[in-house]
Image 1 (cartoon, protein in one colour):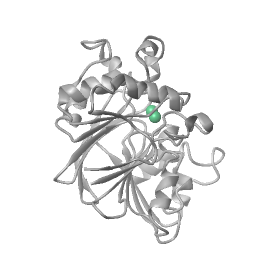
Image 2 (cartoon, protein in one colour):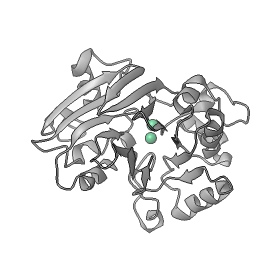
Image 3 (cartoon, helix red, strand yellow):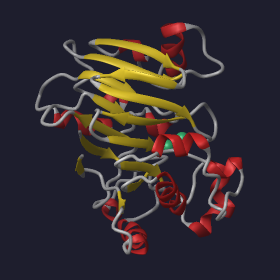
Length: 282
Ligand SMILES: [Zn+2]
Ligand SMILES: [Zn+2]
């Protein structure tokens, strides 16, 4: 599989000269089978706009899977030109929320709470093309020729899933928003290495994980719902993931600060700091 990193920023976009090398778009990964166009998209942050450029003028045909509904994971949706055109065919899957209604109407309705007048001119069903909106429960399903496993992980404010995606040859785990300290301090103080996280990451070729905080920020800021980068590296080690990609960077984390983060982990060749525009072939 080929993974396009279309947005690696957390919380809110980060434009400006200090954010050029790692990029300012919020969470979005586009996955293709070898040699093909992206068909499976993980999260619809502002990085979703980058996917249009990957399609060479073609409409998007495929599936978008959301980890949760926070702004930095959905705000690209109405600006996804390749998906908002008559020939597009899009299935959008989101974690079923405790407060939503039944079936597909419920999925569109819960998404529309943040995307409808007066917050935004149209609601999700107003996008052009053929869109279907569906809720997901934890479990395993097939999408666009990939096997996807969804497990609930602790975060803050709304139900959040992490995903494991496999094409039968390679496997990745995608956990961009994760608050393991909500379950306790764990062995090093970075949070619990709990069964859902360990199960998603077990033996994967690539763990793509939330690395929002630095260790000295955890005490004051973990209550916002994120871990230190050190947790991501610790999880990869315990789950025997072959590589870990640190993502969902704090919006004020400059290129220089992310270089420093990379330098801190550099002795370990299995750790990479995610940059927008990066391509990963597995
Ligand atoms: Zn986020
Ligand atoms: Zn979030």
